[in-house]
Image 1: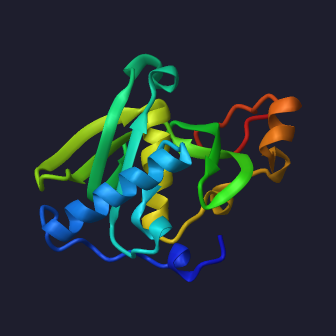
Image 2: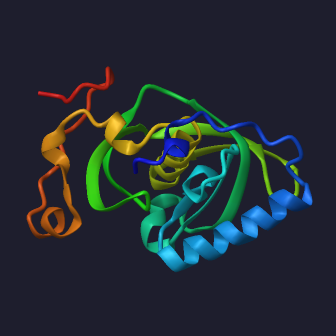
Length: 177
């Protein structure tokens, strides 16, 4: 956090199936494996391109199950309804901290995969959260910018040791009373 590339709007990838993009994806996969996260956007490796990789481990997959390592190029995220939920998020660009962030529960993801083939899928739950988080990186948005209540922001050790129950969110996106 603090590097200007993380605050810029990333540039669209002209050739999704080009060799430079394939090399970038390989390097990002290595970085993600070393870091132990579930997603990584190109701006996080100082490359201002509209590209991210992600995976959902079985333990976090819920009803949808695990999602294998996937590259998404030039993503477009569209909410499918007004359902918003709070969920805990961390970020490799903000190590040691996590927060409750409001996100759409159900989204449509379009874009291209690593082979340049179109992606068009409806996703929900944790997978939708990860995709929105990574897409935010491509738009110069870090998760604290999305927070609605800073009481749910803290160091990993403390928020895990003293967990706060997350409030319900109303359809308008404001905490329910």
